[in-house]
Image (cartoon, rainbow, N blue to C red; front, top):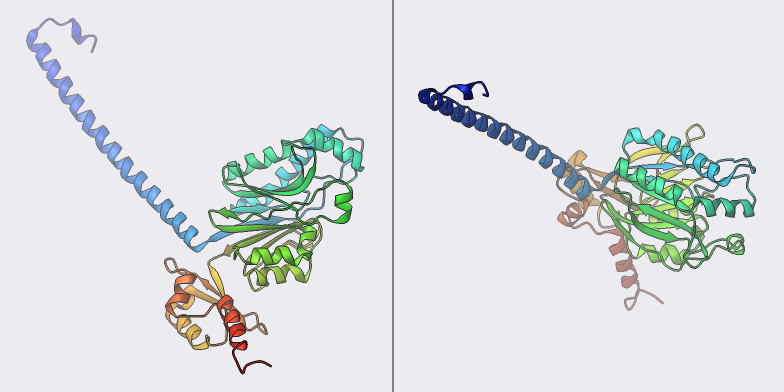
Length: 369
């Protein structure tokens, strides 16, 4: 172009300008087609991702990881900051075990960053140095992997008192909610842990979540309170297993249950109380897909309706019978129709409607002493 500018011929300059204009137009058309093609491709990709996200949200299919390593053992002479560094490295390695399954939610045990081998005084000194360092690591991890993480640990409040807490970090690493253990043990309270007085119900993009920590599982008032809100998921972080109470909480709250227990089996249960996945003596972690789009129904007055439901939807609905209980779990596997819509379509009576109806019927004149 610079060379052409040295020519003085008017005709040549005219031709040159015409050619340049045509080239500019052609280049613009090519660029426009490229942008349009890219736009169409991008729209399709976004549409596909949006449809998949919408489907997953509608059907609440999520991948859950629960981890239960024993507390990290630390030499009592280790400086507090080195303990913090080791604790972060410890959990970085533990998380690496479950990331290949791309979990939506990761749950860790109670007091997950409290090492063993320290006196109470040394542990307090460690906490004073730790501050939010471990929580910030968990938050970065949640953001980098676009997943929820439950960080369970001792926390100092602004007034200097302490709580045994679960902090739910969302997919961007921000605090989505916090639960302070409502029923600490006597020993905890003697060591300065103050009992929480609230039990928040937290809305996540996959459903409604509630919490219990260790000793909480023994107190019916907390369980009964949660049952009123029909949570999708109970998250239980602990140092003790809870035994039959896990199944009872799941069934009575009509909720899936995720237990993360240090050094003991970490189990994921369905609303029937059945174990759907568990860690083992070889692997102290487990990941599994869970379909939260489900509901409980009693068999009474529903036998024919359940048969017709299954006849219509076939493999796109799962009806799980644990035996001996009289209740079944209806789970939608359909890409468009939810369990709620299926139940309404066939007028299936939910367990939570049937039991109150039976109680009211009992109270009618002539039906009781």
